[in-house]
Length: 482
Image (cartoon, rainbow, N blue to C red; front, side):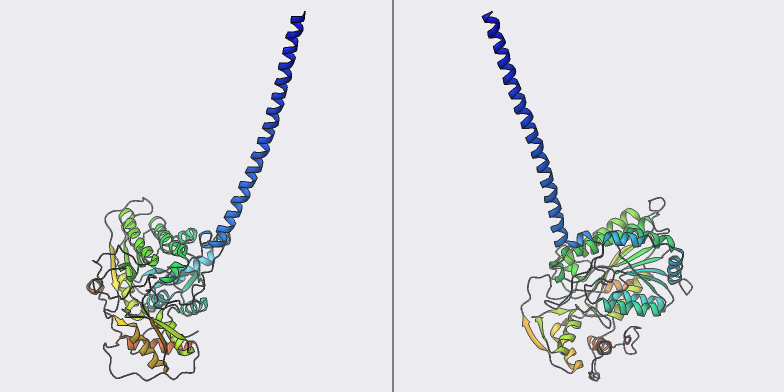
């Protein structure tokens, strides 16, 4: 009996200890479960906080309104004032996209895209509210081609200037859509509505120094935006259009061989802006090779003229001289300043000689190789920036308060100099406008547009180049103001 009692005592003790262990395990499990819930909630809150902070500091990655200012060369003004690009919500743009393709919309697009001459082109111009885009659109319309424009009118510089250009185009029957090149649905419906023969892709985030402030906008517009246009042209257009797009002289980067030739190396960009343009040329090669798109890249050299970009040196300097504000010059900087009318002729020549794409959106295959080209569009005459300032001083009748500094490491290069022999051979590109004549046309427009009480100096009797294209103010935008 004592042994049985002892055995029962051991069992009870085991049950008791086992129950205590079970209770401890249950309690521990509840504690772990509660801890896991708390940890999960803390993780969710931390993630939301990080997303909020990311969105606050990098809104460009969560939006689709990227810079579409028409591409030229970089500004030569250190610290040029500019506002950050405005951004529209992805949700807002997707709801707006639902209105694309309506009967009225298609009617307006087709009317604007229809050529008025036999054999005329039908051209989609991206960045049509920009400097080069607006001038090219007017030139194409004036000779009887069909034109549809697209621009997102961001605030990289004063949108009022872009709206003024849009109004000039509207007055001549050119529709410019307020939309973004990264809106794939819009591009698809445009190509469904109109069999465009060509795309003149000038939409881009321009400027060398701004890339140090907002690098994501350059990748979004100059890389992702270019891919968006190529994708739509390759896979949603039937037949495929030929594409002419704006690269940049900035791709030459640290190249010291002069004049810059298309045969020179371009693998040493001096700025993120230049790197995105060089990336664009590599992407163009891929789409040409895979899909048979006819693609022509144009490397612009410091484009200037009426209705230009306010962040460019000549424009910014003119404003500062009039306002009596100091200007900062880089010592020994030289630029191949190219007048807008000459650049427009180059763009039109590239369109006219682009050749056909050989791919098919239906089969996804190409019938053979398609043209892949790249050209310099410059003036072939590098000019010291100090001389450009002297011409402005004479035209505006006022001395500039100049401050000359050494060139900093901010992406700018000491000089640019274009060799245009390939463009001259292939489509007769020959710039004819001297810097004196071109800046006179710019100042005429500048004084009229801003309603300044300035008597412009009379032209000199000598000029290094005959201004055959500018003597009669051939550009339809030269004397116009909003």
